[in-house]
Structures are given as structure tokens and as C-alpha cells.
Image (tube, rainbow, N blue to C red; front, side):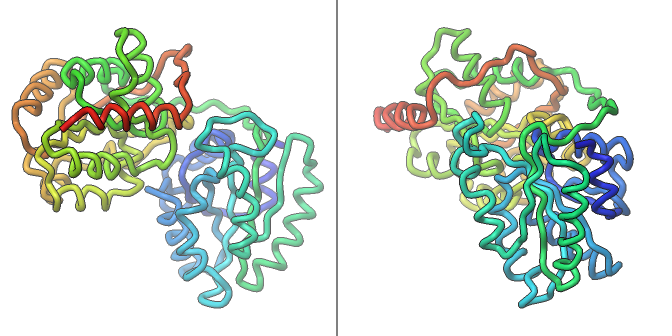
Length: 374
């Protein structure tokens, strides 16, 4: 189905969400048509954020907004859907568009398997009426579904189009880029040089894949790394939990700008606990690159100042390898909670692989290694 036809059938003029590779056609269409325009299209920090934003749009206009997201974001919308949108509370109608990662019978990565199994059930449990769009779904079927949806929306209830892999098409071209010069994979290679045998917790997406391949290229064990393949935005909290319980061992967290934005409150908790043995590195390319390159707001905010305000004793931003190496060396010797923001370009190797160990093997190897540390 052409994404333009889906948007025409829905008939909305305001969209907010968190980008998803399954919805790349939709995201590219919105960027091509609107870019980032507060009146029509906002990329939010997390799915709960965009659900509340959509509610505000409805309160101000009386019109029905569209919220798009990967199905992993369903957990983030449960609270605002149940306690804000629901017709037993404020009866705020919203059309959700949900990318169905991990659909049963369709091969996907381990972090998507269970989420895929419960995707439709979670929507139904939240009293959100779903309609699944696949490659064979016709425009007429979607139009008929929307006629039914309009009756539901009029009662203050919510609805969802669940998008199967490859169901949406967009023929336009959108280019995502920035002016930064350092590649993320090379940044990770520099971090590994200074981290030695210290444990690393890395964020979801290509950063963890590049860390895995860096270990392979170096002939190093993967036992040093916990690859947070799912649970976007929570790597720094995992790292805090490890750092508190291994106080004599330096711990590194390799984070991303989209992940930091998704649950930025974790920075306040990190700062309040200020573990002296944690080095928090945020690789900031101002984009949700793993799912297509759509922008985040992180390119225009001052992360080091935010970190300082949250209680980090030290924070800095670098945009070249000379300064990065200098800051990594100082962080090793500092023995204080430190944040290093690294300005990164967009892009990854076309042949970038995925971890060859399972998530369970990764956890067990990492835990066994932590047992050997004081």
C-alpha cells in the first residue's frame, strides 16, 4: 500500500511519534512532506511523550491526531492511554500506527519476539481497536476499516493500524545527514582501546552491533560487554545498577542520543547517586539512525550542561578524535562519574553484522565475568 493513500484515508493533519524501521515509508513521507513542523509533525522523545502531545493537540483543536511507533513502544503508552485517553477518563480519540516487529512466523531479532507475540493483544487489552495491514491488504479494505474506526473515534475511544513488514511503500527519497566527521564505529574502537578489560554496557541498535564486531576484529572476548539489544533508553540505568554493586570496578556505558532522550530522567538518578566508577559516553548523531536516520532533538540541546545540572561531577562534549582520546584518558584517571558527549556523523558499514551469540549467552557470559571482579 502506498503510504500517501493510507494518510489520505485517515484524513489527519497532525502526526507525532518515534521512528521505526517497519514504518520507514511513513517516516520518510512525513519528513518529505512536513519535515519537523510543530503544526503537523513532531518526533517525540518516547511513545508516552507523543501520546500526551497528541492529547494536547486534540484538546486545542478538537481534531484526531495520529501517533506512530514501533510495537516496542506499546509499553510506554499504557499509562497515558489508560489514565488519559481512555473513554472512562477524558475520552480523547487517537489513531495509532504501530510497526509490527517480531510478528509470529516472521524472522526477527530476539528483543522483538515476545513483543511481537503480544502486540495485538496489548492493544486490545488497552481497548484500542486494531486493524492489521499487510502487503496484500487493499486500499478498499483500509478505507472500510477507517469508516468503522471513525464511529469508534467519535465515542472517544482509540484505534490502531498495525503494519506488517513491507506493507507500506513510499517512492520519494529523503537524505539524512549532519556535519560531524567521526564515524560511530571508529568512536567505539577508541573507547575499547581505553576501556581495556572493564565491563561495557552498550545501548540498543547499531552501537551494540559495532561493539560486537570491534571485539571480533580485535580478537577479544565478548564477555566484557552487555549488549542491550532492546529496552531502548535504559542502558545507563543498567550500568548504574552494575556500578553500584561493583564499586571497585570501572564501568562504561556507551549510549546514544535517541536513547538518552527516551528516558532522560535516568540522568537525574545517575547524578543523584554519582557513582565514582561510571563513565557515561553518549554518541550523538542527532538521529534515530538504526531505524532509518530520522532526526532527534539532541543535535540542538546541550547535553553536558544537562548532565551537570543533574549532578554529574564532570561532563564535556568532543567532536574530534584528538579530544576524544584526551577525554577518555582523563576519565580513566578521574574516578568520578563522567559524561562524554561525542558528536558523530551518520552512517554505518553496509556489511555490518549482528551478534552471533544469543541474548541469553551474552547475559550469562557477562555475569560470569562480573563474578571474577571485586
